[in-house]
Length: 484
Image (tube, rainbow, N blue to C red; front, top):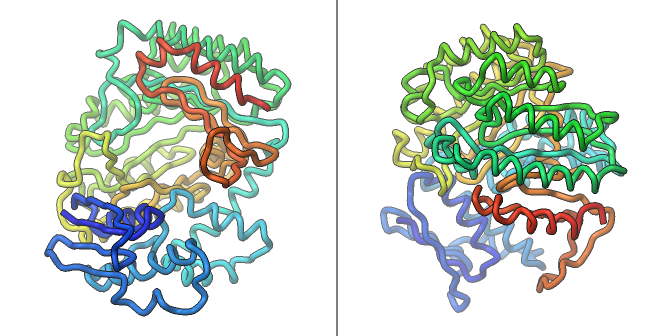
């Protein structure tokens, strides 16, 4: 057990996540003691302590705001933990999920690569490799986002919260189809009511991208997919549509009939996600299908004319070594997808998997992941794929990142939007999160905070049965804020 004591609530978030990055398998507790003599105290597993007053770093000149104090504390804590553990973090003190957002802001302010990279290394203690990657992706994102209409455009997310089985690492609000078969039609009824409302409310707006995710949308039957896609066709015009993606993540949910339905309704981008091409790994994480089924599903999609197929992999799954990852990449190269997304394993509270399921300490895990990520970047380059988006998650193994690679004209625009928050995304379904980009900042009603916001979030309930029963409430929530 690691214990954290902070003098202010303002420090706890960053302190917790920096410590967690160095000690991913340790249980951590944190509390605030406003009368404490120290800003931050961390009691480590060996019962030793590091206390902020021990470092003169905090007492330099120029600390005039709480933000500056938090930054100094982050730098001090990172350096102390690096000294104690003997290893560093690729992303330094960064705890947020969108490092490319920093690069994007600097690029928009007129910075060039030669200015940004050394500044990012020094200011956030990130490695040169990650600083250069952030800049490269930010510039590519700028080019892709230039195709969108920020003023009148928006994107649509549709959530299908069912899977053939729930993977052990998964923390999404989805359930096994066997547990919900009796309520799938009820769910679709509710979902289509919400979609009809969004479509009617957005008739004067310009729809740029549609993303149907989950869960696994292709757990629906061909008839259910037909019903859903017909609803979308009815209420949403395609005059300004640039991309239409459906996640067909599990090969054991894919059939010829379902793919034919998707082709009929003009789906332009498909995601078939193996996560690993190692049978032992698929068995261990609860994906009840064979490696051969991945290949069969991919080849069937190609046969039916899908020319933009993404595949997802996860680096660091339990029991996998670097050689396993390299073999998976070899098999993926033989298939030659149009894009490849490589995730670093993240284990969240809602997942069945625990950090103790991984072999080795933080240093070993970090070293292994670094090799896996480097091998993935090399394989992507050999396939002619370039990095185009990047994000990070809380509790990610080794404090690494998730990177999307794509051919020049096959990048997933929605993937960039969800990270950069440049355009409104209206989301329907259980657990779906709508993000409305406001033209003018507003004060949230009832909020004690004085900070104004330019991004309005509207959350749907996560529980599938609650979503069905409370669909009128979900619609009413959107009606209060949609396109104000």
